[in-house]
Amino acid sequence: MAQKKNTKFTVVLDAGHGGKDPGNSYHGFVEKEIALKTTLKVGDLLEKQKDFEVVYTRQTDVFIELVNRPKVANKINADLFVSIHCNSVTNQTPAGTETFVMGLSRSNMNLEVAKKENSVILLEDNYKKTYEGFDPHKPESLAGLKIKQEDNLNSSITLASIIQDNFTNNLSRKTRGVKQQPLWVLDAAYMPGVLIELGFLSNKEEGEYLNSEEGQDQMAEQIAKAIMAYKKEFFSENASVEEDKPIVKPPKPAKEDVKEITKAITQEVAEVKQSDTVVVPTSENGKYKIQLFASSKKRDVTSPDFKGLKAISFTFDNNLYKYFYGSASDLNEAKKLCQEAKKSGFSDAFVVVIKDGKTVAVK
Image 1 (cartoon, rainbow, N blue to C red):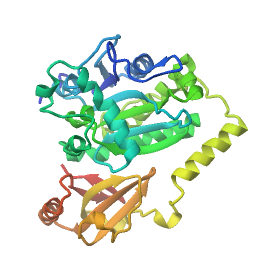
Image 2 (image 1 turned 30 degrees about the vertical axis):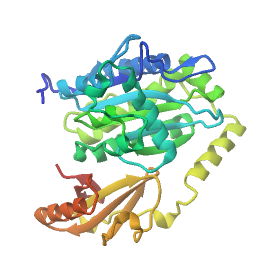
Image 3 (image 1 turned 120 degrees about the horizontal axis):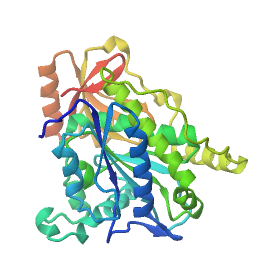
Image 4 (image 1 turned 90 degrees about the horizontal axis):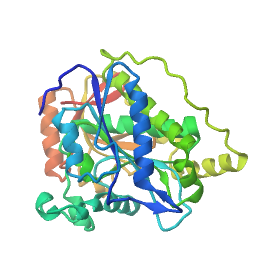
């Protein structure tokens, strides 16, 4: 991996699609254009912070092969990779933001997003050789993707959660949560990364918002704030983020919008009760656990999904469940538990340690 030439926090911003690949197009709204404009606005905000360096995969309407996007970040050993997109479905009713991290999911809707975002591969020259026969339309190809940097998963989930919280709490946007998905552009990046779906262009009202200068300013501001907050949490020694003031004040949502937002959020977390929220007690500080996977769906600890493993525990935070196997006081013992989990079929399992009631990936 390349060595960084300075001590600045380096963020690679990836505007989805471009050139001959327009992405989603509905009601006259074009994904590649909205993604680029929003991405450049995020970059402008970050560049005003003295401790940030911003690198773009594209700054104009050009086609960048999917395989080369994460290479930009890997070459300079970036600290973060953020890819920005817009969603769409044939049903023009769905709306809302969602942020993806690398991972495997059984959700059919998530699988469709993965197919769509990976399908740009087919536009590239020699794609069969470059991606070793990977077919973005086949679920078995998606299932073959692995999290190469397992210890980055928790960091990616943290950033994704902050982004979604900002969209919901500061802009009153509908949230579809944080989700794991086998997306090639995240799989190939060596650092924590997220793919943001700003909203649905197929929903005319949401498309109009995302296509507007005001909408792009607001969404970009919340993404930039999330990245700054992430840096402050994980790189506090070098953090010197200046107090920022909102560029624009989000319009107060109409009563009808508030009802719709409340209804959507209520439906999404309908099964979540107070008793579901498990906070790791600080008395377990220093203990090691094996994280098996994270999911927006709640599973019973006796579920067959755990493939016979016992001593399953979980936490729930930011609409995401994290499931763990075992507990150990010694790192070597934890590594043995991790091998057991992998032999049981959890190839992406990794060791975490409990610090101040939170789980932190062990590198």
